[in-house]
Image (cartoon, rainbow, N blue to C red; front, side, top):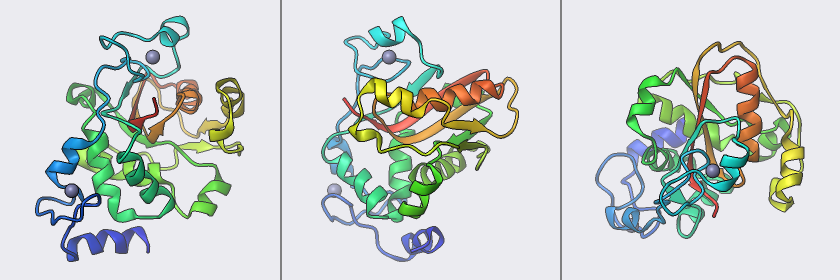
Length: 231
Ligand SMILES: [Zn+2]
Ligand SMILES: [Zn+2]
C-alpha cells in the first residue's frame, strides 16, 4: 500500500490499539493510553547520546570523545513491546503506524530546542536498501514529525552515498569504519540547527557519520531525535 492510501485508510477505518486491539478514539495514534503507559521509558540519559546514565549526566564515551551531534532526544528504550511496533512498521510495511511512531518520537523532544531548529532531515537509507524495503522508515516519521512541529522538512538534502553491510552483525569499531564518509549533504546549510531523525539509535556511529556530513555542509548544531535507544 502506498503511503498516500495508508494515510487515507487511517481516516476511514476505526482505530484500534496496535498492541491490545482495543478501540482508540482519540487522534490518529494506534495506541490506547494503558498500552502507551507500559512502553519502556528511557528515563535518565546522557544528554548527548541518550545512553542511560544515573543522573542524566554525560556518559564516559561522550566525555572522552564527543560525537559530531550535540544532543539526542529519545523517550523510550528499544525493548518489548515497542521493538515489535517498530519492526512491524519497518519490515512489515505497516505505514499506518507512522503517526503513532512519530508521536512517540515527539514524546522525547524538548520544546525549547524546537524553537531554535531551522529544519528537519531524515536519516537516509542506502539506495539498495531502500529499493529492497520499498520505503525509508525515517523519512516517513521525519516528514510527519516536521509537519506536527511546524518545521521545514528537507527531503533528500542528506544522502547516503556508500552502501554498507548490515550494521547489526558488526562491532562498534567495525560500524564506525563502515559508515565513515557514507553521507553527503548536497546543499550548503550555513549556521543551521538541524533536527536529524532516525527510528532507533544503536551505537550512535551512524548518527555521528551523518552529523559529520551536516557539519561539513556548515551546520552549527545537530540534534538527533529517535523513537528508541538500544541499551
Ligand atoms: Zn492497548
Ligand atoms: Zn553519551
